[in-house]
Length: 176
Image (cartoon, rainbow, N blue to C red; front, side):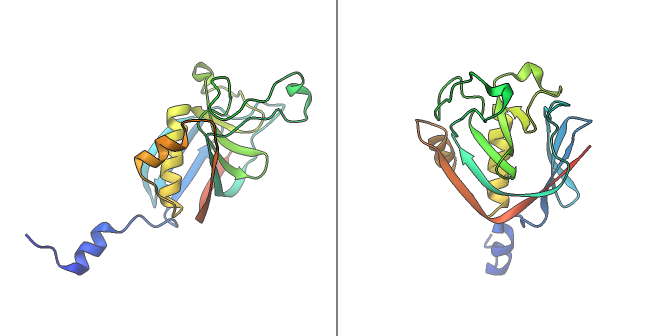
């Protein structure tokens, strides 16, 4: 059966970025992805520690860094920590950093998946590395920067980082 051109265009249209948004509940330690009112995905997260709380409010995601390096911040808790390059097994960022309040707050993967569900970060939102990868793909598609599966695999392989600026910022609400 041949589909009329008008209907084919509607069927191939990507979801509108204005409809896709992220909702984080710090007390519930969840991050939900919604397309309008429909729940698309839900992830367990670790918010910031009481001494280093995750900021609450309305934000937008405008930038994603794939295969990020990690440099210890100039903070007491990071004294003696060593920088780790992209792709290094001890890099605490893992595969991706999804910025929601630049430059210091982002969503990222963690190797310490046993700690998910407990406050564990210095203000960022931690997820399992596979969940952070999946979320970043959703955000890129919704933000007008979709890529192929081969591109994503290439982005997390090797020793270089790739920064993506989203043409359409994706909203994120973080509630206590």
